[in-house]
Length: 291
Ligand SMILES: CC(=O)CC(=O)SCCNC(=O)CCNC(=O)[C@H](O)C(C)(C)COP(=O)(O)OP(=O)(O)OC[C@H]1O[C@@H](n2cnc3c(N)ncnc32)[C@H](O)[C@@H]1OP(=O)(O)O
Ligand SMILES: NC(=O)C1=CN([C@@H]2O[C@H](COP(=O)(O)OP(=O)(O)OC[C@H]3O[C@@H](n4cnc5c(N)ncnc54)[C@H](OP(=O)(O)O)[C@@H]3O)[C@@H](O)[C@H]2O)C=CC1
Image (cartoon, rainbow, N blue to C red):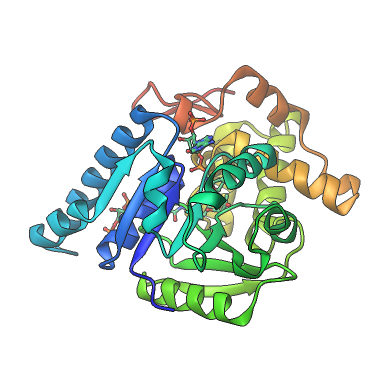
């Protein structure tokens, strides 16, 4: 099945990145969110990120304009009826995703693929709540989507071969390399990465180091491009906590216990870069460590 139109649900940091890369790959994109402001912000971010690629000589201005023209943004879910595949990239909460699928499934083409960009939630369980478990799959992009090479593909227990092959071909067309993960809590990347971030928060809580020393230690001592606390802020601390909770519950092992300091940050609404404060204060330039 040839995919020419991609629907994206959720115009946050991942949704805008997925729309950006799909449009640049020559696909038509329908980007929907519950809030018109989120769609407007996403379109503006995509424009800025494409400008950056033009300025660096990666693409020409014509390619930017053509990509922008291929993206139709809005709040009307019925626009997704044109899509050959819909990639759900809304907030990492199972009840949000389930309510989206309930609303969207009746609008889709009979043979459309439904994919979730979930960071951690069972693909089999999400698929079972739709009318098409065989055409449901995990298509997990990494942040920032225009930069990171990987797409993790997660098959649910019912995902058929045609769906898997179509999604692998789509990832190729979008210039990504794929890694296949089995459907266990948080799959591969986040099974390893998010407990590392959680451990850095726990080390901060215990006073093993401060924000600056913990991030410097991993950047300079283990060649990570960002320190774990800056990376947590970049991902979103709400998303990190949601993933830890899925791991904790799904594996039933106390080693995945979320750090109480991570919980407190989320309770305070200090979700990281997207809210202006996390382990760093982003109102300062450069961002200032908060502890
Ligand atoms: C939670 C999950 O479910 C899964 C996940 O995604 S986990 C998170 C995975 N991501 C990571 O681990 C990211 C780690 N960090 C990095 O790789 C780097 O710090 C970074 C790529 C984000 C920034 O790199 P940097 O060298 O500090 O900055 P900078 O030089 O400005 O940018 C490098 C390139 O990325 C581009 N870029 C940076 N941020 C970007 C963004 N948000 N959107 C688009 N492009 C971006 C820049 O234009 C630049 O492009 P060129 O190479 O063509 O020049
Ligand atoms: N952040 C990351 O590094 C990565 C995240 N992911 C996954 O991608 C998904 C999105 O994450 P991310 O982009 O960071 O999150 P964001 O918080 O940036 O964006 C989520 C968007 O979804 C919107 N939304 C919420 N409910 C609905 C709904 N019912 N219908 C349509 N849109 C809705 C939100 O609106 P509002 O703000 O109004 O709630 C927001 O605009 C999550 O599943 C996450 O786990 C995957 C890889 C990396």
